[in-house]
Length: 319
Ligand SMILES: [Zn+2]
Image (cartoon, rainbow, N blue to C red):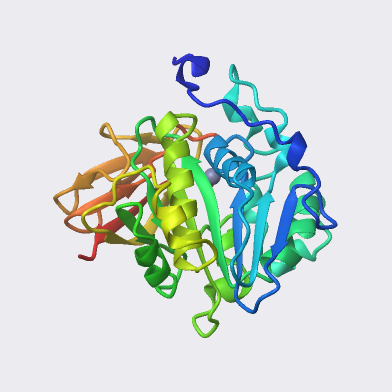
């Protein structure tokens, strides 16, 4: 059993100075340029224990970043969960009542259900729905995990991810059965809408490189949208540009039937299993095998916390 506090290389930033961001919602910063242009939005702390995004937004605010055109929105999402971050129990502050990255369907957001995450999501929704381009900053569970960009359920945000140019791996997937993600909300997942959103998994939770990646990707996003001076952004980049970006098309997910779910081999994120039909996992008498050659494992979970949990998603490289 690992001792989590040994793995915590990042300190949670002090968000108290950023409570009043000039909007009517706490920890949401709205900066108007006074010139026509897009609304660009950066979101951190959709998951309260993923510190890298909060570090990136704190860094941008300390640089006093201002948009050259259009409007810039910087939002710390699940501040309440983040406020409970404990280095000795860092997984417990992912959320308070429910996963804030599964609540974004209009029927859920406008429905009768109540939770602290839903209340916060209802406050944030008008800002999100005003964004022409959105970057949602996350991190992953697996130690040493390489970063990737989730472009959503359609291909339309892939060009934005490629223009950002970082990180090396891009994903188009099928979303989550448990609920709609922020990047799939409304126009973001409508192929006919020009609105675009990407989620960047910046690396492993609490590892120092994830914060550098979060700042790097944020600068590239702002540069691509013309929100900041290109030379200013370029001179502050922190992570080497990958020689190329490869797209993984994600197909089916493997969902736990019980908490007894187990993989039949050691797994790691972006591991490629060459042969179709290789036994992958079993649970309650069911066995899963790889559905095709060159099967890429996306963020395998270490253990099933509950039935219905997505344990791994399976994809293949398109290029
Ligand atoms: Zn996350």
